[in-house]
Image (cartoon, rainbow, N blue to C red):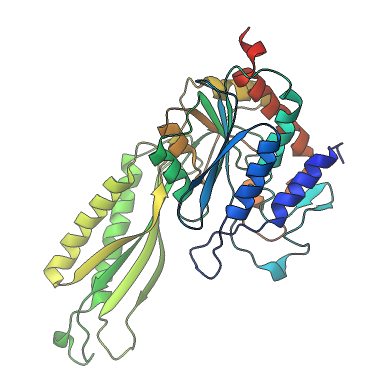
Length: 386
């Protein structure tokens, strides 16, 4: 096992031990405040000035700042994890476990461990003057509503020259990812006895037409938007689940379809929603069927780093790898909206996230710390600007 500082291992264990699950199911959802307050205490002990920014009564963001002035660097991550099937884990998910040159624990990859790595990176630099600020941003509810990142965007801060989001990327810089939106379509007709179709208006029949139109629209999107940056180089529209009616001998009075769209850079969620609503009207109005389209997840815009990004070029040089594109969404678009040169870079692999026995390879820990330390020095230290 690589030589790791004892305080780092203890720091990793402490964040794993504090549950911070976010879920759309209220019985599973919990506040992230205990974890954020712990992080604030840890960063304050290093000399950071910490501000807790509430999202609501239960959820809170942290902005921790070391140094003052314009410019600087934001290192950002989310504090929440997904729910878990604890019976499927072979280790305690709420305790850091070392095995087979891996650290196991809920959130160790996605992505609570990023904060102790930041602390380890900055600790040897504390004796030096910070010419520009280092800002650590810890957000709420990335896994569900993105309300933490949206609250930060509405607040208009923090602002810096550059931002790195520490999602699991295998220490390869991510320059682009698709966006995502999730919506539901509910059709309401009129139930009646199935022996006489004229007694009602069948919502399931109407949904057949809606699905056909959505599949046609899916092909239209595929023709309109294309980018070889992605392994699937076009937007996708997935028909995820459908529910309707209540008995085979009744005309179906209601039917609901849930779907998602993975958006390419250049696509706008509200434009897509408006186009789908227009299609729905054309299908349902002639059949005297009412429709409602509601948002299940407001969505994350697609992200595309500036092609001339100095940060991207720096990280490519530090890692020895060209930047990549990924399918999963992040908070990067919200930081980019604040005017920061933004990329995504972190240890671990996304295929280890959201599953039992989540782990990060221990061999990624020290290289990540070294990259972060060099980025902090380049962006914030006076010597880097001499």
